[in-house]
Image 1 (tube, rainbow, N blue to C red):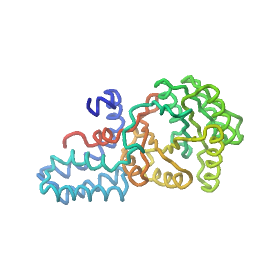
Image 2: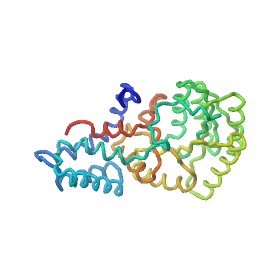
Image 3: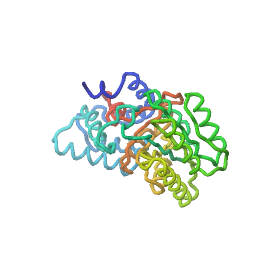
Length: 321
Protein backbone atom coordinates (compact mmCIF):
# COMPACT_ATOMS: atom_id res chain seq x y z
CA UNK A 1 0.00 0.00 0.00
CA UNK A 2 1.44 3.39 -0.96
CA UNK A 3 2.12 6.32 1.31
CA UNK A 4 -0.95 8.25 0.21
CA UNK A 5 -3.31 5.29 0.60
CA UNK A 6 -1.99 4.28 3.99
CA UNK A 7 -1.95 7.60 5.77
CA UNK A 8 -3.94 10.15 3.84
CA UNK A 9 -7.54 10.00 2.69
CA UNK A 10 -8.86 11.75 -0.40
CA UNK A 11 -10.90 14.10 1.79
CA UNK A 12 -7.86 15.05 3.85
CA UNK A 13 -5.90 15.72 0.69
CA UNK A 14 -8.64 17.96 -0.68
CA UNK A 15 -8.84 19.87 2.62
CA UNK A 16 -5.08 20.37 2.63
CA UNK A 17 -5.10 21.55 -0.99
CA UNK A 18 -7.79 24.12 -0.23
CA UNK A 19 -6.24 25.21 3.06
CA UNK A 20 -2.80 25.89 1.58
CA UNK A 21 -4.06 27.53 -1.60
CA UNK A 22 -3.01 31.08 -0.66
CA UNK A 23 0.50 30.02 0.34
CA UNK A 24 0.84 27.83 -2.71
CA UNK A 25 -0.18 30.61 -5.08
CA UNK A 26 2.17 33.08 -3.44
CA UNK A 27 5.18 30.76 -3.73
CA UNK A 28 4.47 29.46 -7.23
CA UNK A 29 3.66 32.79 -8.82
CA UNK A 30 7.16 34.03 -8.01
CA UNK A 31 8.90 30.81 -9.01
CA UNK A 32 6.92 30.45 -12.25
CA UNK A 33 8.00 33.89 -13.40
CA UNK A 34 11.63 33.09 -12.59
CA UNK A 35 11.80 29.84 -14.55
CA UNK A 36 9.83 30.98 -17.57
CA UNK A 37 11.93 30.25 -20.66
CA UNK A 38 14.80 28.72 -18.69
CA UNK A 39 16.12 25.21 -19.22
CA UNK A 40 18.16 24.91 -16.03
CA UNK A 41 18.34 26.18 -12.46
CA UNK A 42 20.56 29.28 -12.40
CA UNK A 43 21.19 32.23 -10.06
CA UNK A 44 17.97 33.97 -11.14
CA UNK A 45 15.94 30.91 -10.21
CA UNK A 46 17.71 30.60 -6.85
CA UNK A 47 17.09 34.30 -6.14
CA UNK A 48 13.41 33.83 -6.93
CA UNK A 49 13.26 30.82 -4.63
CA UNK A 50 14.84 32.84 -1.84
CA UNK A 51 12.32 35.66 -2.25
CA UNK A 52 9.36 33.26 -2.44
CA UNK A 53 10.34 31.43 0.74
CA UNK A 54 11.12 34.53 2.78
CA UNK A 55 7.85 36.24 1.81
CA UNK A 56 6.01 33.03 2.79
CA UNK A 57 7.62 33.30 6.25
CA UNK A 58 9.81 30.25 5.96
CA UNK A 59 12.41 32.41 7.73
CA UNK A 60 15.84 33.61 6.59
CA UNK A 61 17.93 30.85 8.21
CA UNK A 62 15.76 28.02 6.88
CA UNK A 63 15.51 29.67 3.45
CA UNK A 64 19.30 29.87 3.16
CA UNK A 65 19.54 26.24 4.21
CA UNK A 66 17.07 25.23 1.46
CA UNK A 67 18.98 27.25 -1.17
CA UNK A 68 22.26 25.61 -0.09
CA UNK A 69 20.70 22.17 -0.43
CA UNK A 70 19.37 22.96 -3.90
CA UNK A 71 22.77 24.30 -4.98
CA UNK A 72 24.48 21.16 -3.66
CA UNK A 73 22.06 18.93 -5.57
CA UNK A 74 22.56 20.90 -8.79
CA UNK A 75 26.34 20.64 -8.39
CA UNK A 76 26.23 16.94 -7.50
CA UNK A 77 23.81 15.92 -10.24
CA UNK A 78 25.67 18.09 -12.77
CA UNK A 79 22.54 19.06 -14.68
CA UNK A 80 19.18 19.76 -13.11
CA UNK A 81 16.59 21.30 -15.37
CA UNK A 82 14.00 23.80 -14.22
CA UNK A 83 11.34 21.16 -14.95
CA UNK A 84 12.84 19.04 -12.16
CA UNK A 85 12.67 21.82 -9.59
CA UNK A 86 9.31 20.65 -8.26
CA UNK A 87 10.49 17.18 -7.24
CA UNK A 88 13.81 18.56 -6.01
CA UNK A 89 12.06 20.94 -3.63
CA UNK A 90 9.76 18.19 -2.38
CA UNK A 91 12.67 15.88 -1.61
CA UNK A 92 14.93 18.41 0.07
CA UNK A 93 12.32 20.19 2.18
CA UNK A 94 10.60 16.96 3.28
CA UNK A 95 13.97 15.70 4.46
CA UNK A 96 14.51 18.87 6.50
CA UNK A 97 11.25 18.75 8.45
CA UNK A 98 11.56 17.42 11.98
CA UNK A 99 10.23 13.87 12.39
CA UNK A 100 8.27 12.48 15.36
CA UNK A 101 10.35 10.87 18.10
CA UNK A 102 10.02 7.39 16.62
CA UNK A 103 10.88 8.64 13.14
CA UNK A 104 7.54 7.49 11.76
CA UNK A 105 4.56 9.51 10.56
CA UNK A 106 1.61 9.38 12.93
CA UNK A 107 -1.27 7.68 11.21
CA UNK A 108 -4.36 8.71 13.17
CA UNK A 109 -5.80 9.92 16.46
CA UNK A 110 -5.38 6.67 18.37
CA UNK A 111 -3.17 6.73 21.47
CA UNK A 112 -0.44 4.35 22.71
CA UNK A 113 -1.87 1.30 24.47
CA UNK A 114 0.56 1.84 27.36
CA UNK A 115 -0.87 5.27 28.20
CA UNK A 116 -3.28 5.41 31.11
CA UNK A 117 -4.46 7.97 30.25
CA UNK A 118 -2.59 9.86 27.50
CA UNK A 119 -2.22 13.42 28.77
CA UNK A 120 -1.78 16.43 26.46
CA UNK A 121 -0.91 19.75 28.12
CA UNK A 122 -1.65 22.57 25.69
CA UNK A 123 0.29 25.85 25.83
CA UNK A 124 0.26 29.02 23.73
CA UNK A 125 -0.64 32.70 23.89
CA UNK A 126 -4.23 33.90 23.90
CA UNK A 127 -5.71 34.35 20.46
CA UNK A 128 -3.80 31.66 18.56
CA UNK A 129 -6.74 29.26 18.54
CA UNK A 130 -5.62 27.23 21.56
CA UNK A 131 -9.05 26.41 23.00
CA UNK A 132 -10.50 25.78 19.54
CA UNK A 133 -7.61 23.41 18.82
CA UNK A 134 -8.35 21.55 22.06
CA UNK A 135 -12.00 21.18 21.02
CA UNK A 136 -11.02 19.88 17.57
CA UNK A 137 -8.53 17.42 19.06
CA UNK A 138 -11.11 16.17 21.54
CA UNK A 139 -13.57 15.61 18.69
CA UNK A 140 -11.01 13.70 16.60
CA UNK A 141 -9.75 11.55 19.49
CA UNK A 142 -13.33 10.74 20.48
CA UNK A 143 -14.20 9.90 16.85
CA UNK A 144 -11.24 7.49 16.87
CA UNK A 145 -12.89 5.58 19.73
CA UNK A 146 -11.24 7.18 22.75
CA UNK A 147 -12.90 8.42 25.93
CA UNK A 148 -11.80 12.05 26.32
CA UNK A 149 -11.78 14.42 29.32
CA UNK A 150 -10.89 18.13 29.14
CA UNK A 151 -9.43 20.28 31.90
CA UNK A 152 -10.05 24.05 32.02
CA UNK A 153 -6.79 25.08 33.71
CA UNK A 154 -6.71 28.53 32.09
CA UNK A 155 -8.43 29.98 35.14
CA UNK A 156 -7.31 33.56 34.54
CA UNK A 157 -9.96 34.18 31.87
CA UNK A 158 -13.61 33.40 32.40
CA UNK A 159 -14.01 33.35 28.61
CA UNK A 160 -11.50 30.50 28.31
CA UNK A 161 -13.42 28.34 30.79
CA UNK A 162 -16.72 29.16 29.08
CA UNK A 163 -15.36 28.47 25.61
CA UNK A 164 -13.99 25.07 26.64
CA UNK A 165 -17.31 24.26 28.28
CA UNK A 166 -19.13 25.06 25.05
CA UNK A 167 -16.82 22.77 23.11
CA UNK A 168 -17.39 20.00 25.66
CA UNK A 169 -21.16 20.25 25.25
CA UNK A 170 -20.88 20.48 21.47
CA UNK A 171 -18.86 17.29 21.05
CA UNK A 172 -20.09 15.38 24.10
CA UNK A 173 -17.02 15.18 26.33
CA UNK A 174 -16.59 15.93 30.03
CA UNK A 175 -14.99 19.23 31.05
CA UNK A 176 -13.50 19.56 34.55
CA UNK A 177 -13.49 23.16 35.72
CA UNK A 178 -13.44 25.45 38.74
CA UNK A 179 -14.31 29.11 39.14
CA UNK A 180 -12.21 31.86 37.60
CA UNK A 181 -9.07 32.59 39.63
CA UNK A 182 -8.72 29.05 40.97
CA UNK A 183 -5.31 27.39 41.15
CA UNK A 184 -4.60 25.95 37.64
CA UNK A 185 -2.62 23.07 39.14
CA UNK A 186 -5.62 22.13 41.30
CA UNK A 187 -7.80 21.99 38.18
CA UNK A 188 -5.23 19.76 36.47
CA UNK A 189 -5.11 17.46 39.51
CA UNK A 190 -8.90 17.18 39.63
CA UNK A 191 -9.05 16.56 35.87
CA UNK A 192 -6.60 13.66 35.93
CA UNK A 193 -8.18 12.18 39.07
CA UNK A 194 -11.61 12.28 37.42
CA UNK A 195 -10.23 10.93 34.15
CA UNK A 196 -8.65 7.94 35.90
CA UNK A 197 -11.85 7.24 37.78
CA UNK A 198 -13.80 7.31 34.49
CA UNK A 199 -11.27 5.15 32.67
CA UNK A 200 -10.52 7.90 30.16
CA UNK A 201 -8.07 7.31 27.33
CA UNK A 202 -7.14 10.93 26.59
CA UNK A 203 -6.92 14.01 28.80
CA UNK A 204 -6.35 17.46 27.31
CA UNK A 205 -5.41 20.29 29.68
CA UNK A 206 -5.83 23.94 28.68
CA UNK A 207 -3.36 26.41 30.28
CA UNK A 208 -3.08 30.19 30.53
CA UNK A 209 -1.49 32.00 27.60
CA UNK A 210 0.43 34.79 29.28
CA UNK A 211 3.91 35.74 28.10
CA UNK A 212 4.57 38.98 29.94
CA UNK A 213 6.53 37.16 32.65
CA UNK A 214 8.50 34.17 31.38
CA UNK A 215 9.70 33.16 34.85
CA UNK A 216 6.14 33.20 36.17
CA UNK A 217 4.95 31.18 33.18
CA UNK A 218 7.72 28.63 33.66
CA UNK A 219 6.92 28.23 37.35
CA UNK A 220 3.20 27.86 36.67
CA UNK A 221 3.65 25.22 33.95
CA UNK A 222 6.17 23.33 36.07
CA UNK A 223 3.75 23.28 38.99
CA UNK A 224 0.95 21.95 36.77
CA UNK A 225 3.22 19.18 35.44
CA UNK A 226 4.41 18.18 38.91
CA UNK A 227 0.88 17.99 40.27
CA UNK A 228 -0.29 15.86 37.33
CA UNK A 229 2.55 13.39 37.94
CA UNK A 230 1.06 12.61 41.35
CA UNK A 231 -1.92 11.10 39.55
CA UNK A 232 -0.30 9.84 36.31
CA UNK A 233 3.47 9.41 36.82
CA UNK A 234 4.44 9.90 33.17
CA UNK A 235 2.09 12.82 32.53
CA UNK A 236 2.06 14.87 30.45
CA UNK A 237 3.21 12.65 27.61
CA UNK A 238 2.66 15.51 25.20
CA UNK A 239 3.30 19.23 25.71
CA UNK A 240 1.66 20.82 22.69
CA UNK A 241 2.49 24.38 21.68
CA UNK A 242 -0.22 26.02 19.56
CA UNK A 243 0.95 28.71 17.14
CA UNK A 244 -1.05 30.90 14.76
CA UNK A 245 0.36 30.31 11.27
CA UNK A 246 -1.10 33.59 9.98
CA UNK A 247 1.18 35.65 12.27
CA UNK A 248 4.35 34.64 10.43
CA UNK A 249 7.48 35.79 12.27
CA UNK A 250 5.45 36.47 15.41
CA UNK A 251 4.94 32.72 15.69
CA UNK A 252 8.72 32.22 15.73
CA UNK A 253 9.06 34.55 18.73
CA UNK A 254 6.23 32.82 20.59
CA UNK A 255 7.92 29.48 19.94
CA UNK A 256 11.19 30.79 21.40
CA UNK A 257 9.43 31.95 24.56
CA UNK A 258 7.52 28.74 25.21
CA UNK A 259 10.36 26.41 24.30
CA UNK A 260 12.44 28.27 26.91
CA UNK A 261 9.65 28.00 29.49
CA UNK A 262 8.75 24.31 29.21
CA UNK A 263 9.64 21.06 27.43
CA UNK A 264 7.50 21.45 24.31
CA UNK A 265 7.65 18.21 22.29
CA UNK A 266 4.96 18.80 19.64
CA UNK A 267 3.54 21.74 17.70
CA UNK A 268 0.12 22.60 16.31
CA UNK A 269 0.01 25.30 13.62
CA UNK A 270 -3.43 26.89 13.24
CA UNK A 271 -5.25 29.17 10.76
CA UNK A 272 -3.27 28.02 7.72
CA UNK A 273 -6.34 28.25 5.52
CA UNK A 274 -6.56 32.04 5.69
CA UNK A 275 -2.96 33.02 5.06
CA UNK A 276 -0.19 33.09 2.47
CA UNK A 277 2.33 32.56 5.27
CA UNK A 278 2.06 28.77 5.46
CA UNK A 279 5.82 28.51 5.01
CA UNK A 280 6.06 29.20 8.74
CA UNK A 281 5.42 25.46 9.26
CA UNK A 282 8.68 24.63 7.48
CA UNK A 283 10.71 27.30 9.26
CA UNK A 284 9.53 26.60 12.79
CA UNK A 285 9.95 22.84 12.46
CA UNK A 286 13.48 23.33 11.12
CA UNK A 287 14.63 26.02 13.55
CA UNK A 288 13.31 24.52 16.78
CA UNK A 289 13.75 20.83 15.93
CA UNK A 290 10.28 20.08 17.27
CA UNK A 291 7.82 18.04 15.18
CA UNK A 292 4.66 19.65 13.86
CA UNK A 293 1.99 17.15 14.87
CA UNK A 294 -1.26 18.91 13.95
CA UNK A 295 -2.31 21.63 11.50
CA UNK A 296 -5.53 23.66 11.60
CA UNK A 297 -7.27 24.34 8.28
CA UNK A 298 -10.59 25.94 9.23
CA UNK A 299 -13.06 26.63 12.04
CA UNK A 300 -15.09 23.43 11.99
CA UNK A 301 -14.64 20.61 14.50
CA UNK A 302 -13.19 18.38 11.76
CA UNK A 303 -10.77 21.02 10.46
CA UNK A 304 -7.61 19.69 12.06
CA UNK A 305 -5.24 17.11 10.62
CA UNK A 306 -2.34 15.00 11.72
CA UNK A 307 0.59 16.64 9.96
CA UNK A 308 2.26 14.57 7.24
CA UNK A 309 5.43 16.30 6.06
CA UNK A 310 5.56 14.71 2.63
CA UNK A 311 1.93 15.47 1.84
CA UNK A 312 2.31 19.04 3.09
CA UNK A 313 5.34 19.67 0.88
CA UNK A 314 3.78 17.88 -2.09
CA UNK A 315 0.75 20.14 -1.76
CA UNK A 316 2.93 23.28 -1.85
CA UNK A 317 5.23 22.14 -4.66
CA UNK A 318 3.39 19.26 -6.24
CA UNK A 319 2.13 20.80 -9.46
CA UNK A 320 4.18 21.38 -12.56
CA UNK A 321 5.55 24.87 -13.11
